[in-house]
Image (tube, rainbow over all chains, first blue to last red; front, side, top):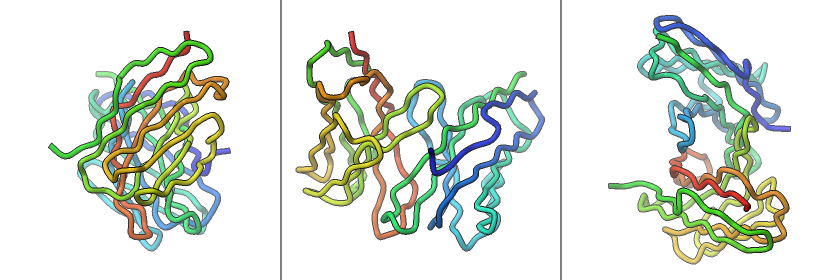
Length: 112
Length: 114
């Protein structure tokens, strides 16, 4: 199974609402990253949080990390139609040189 | 502009043929990766390379081969041994140093077996 698993698999919200998605992982990590993918395109890096950090902000994005629970959450505030995409968490595993392992993603649809 | 380029965007392969997907980066990154993406399954790691002339198998390397003769290039060959090659293939690169920083992705190659 995947190292990172996102929840929910899909999320539908209206513009202006907040979107929250979660990621759980299994092994010790150096850092956890969130990426965004528009349909049929490559992934774009959003934010990286290191294992010794608990929260990080970037614009309308807020990421938390709880290493005791091996979980992370991504919050997108005041969502826009342009936020419609799939969102993936990726973990840099401690004993694997740091190669990235991705989850299956959360598909977010924001309706105007 | 700095970036990572994959070609072609679409590729069709007949049964029994080998095909090679191109990946070039001008970001001066040491590390490069190949991922496969199937619908609803996220990304799975095929091969990765930490440095020129070195590469390691990922989680689903069977039926694939790579080379890393130049820092800028990491081509992926999908061989006839890969029984279900139809998928979206993504190449990525990142700086090394022990801790992986952000990865930069190409726009992908969609491979279809006909």
